[in-house]
Length: 273
Image: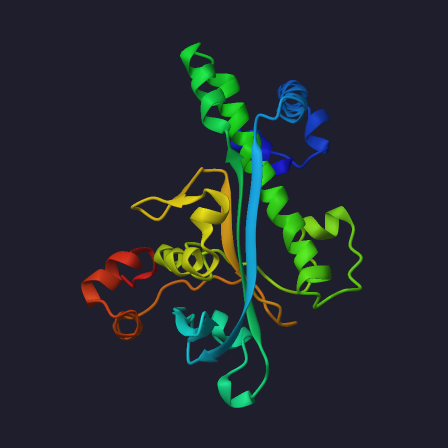
């Protein structure tokens, strides 16, 4: 619930925010409205949840991950940190075994949506100039997508992939991500290139399996959707790639098979200077 309140610029942690001296009254009213709408979403089947996931043989090749699927090899491109620090500069490929290790390593992928069916209700609210309930519904759908993603990842760890079958974590421990494995999403700090969603959508046939589509700008539609890759390595962790130099941009462009200018456009937030 904490990120839900942040959507409304009400800052504080749930449930303490409900009794906060400054925003407690507003937060409590919003919370009651949200619970009422959640009940209606459930009772009247306003939204549909869909997901697809899979696991694929994989090995690292430098900074990239080579994924095997349908008798083909696909290259998942990654970037490496270039910070001046005492610890090693990380890259997601560090968490996949190299081919020379001769290990049967894998990578997972997933796509989740809780936004199927939302448009007709949003349109109904907006037709009545009811911006409040329109925003409320979209905010709830976004949080449901994140909750579904968290639930699915737990099922993957303990059952479908099963690399930590004996996991027993509290809800707070789950929220704080105190588990083995990560699920970085293309476009986020550890893998900032949004275009890598194309490979994910190809591997999982996401559009046909869930109804999620990629826009021309590589956003997902419906908006209440989440996708990413699963890494199971015990030492896997989230990190920020940060700024990269011209040499890495040129290397990335070569691996991606595009011009340096195109690579710079894709990686603009990570460019030095």
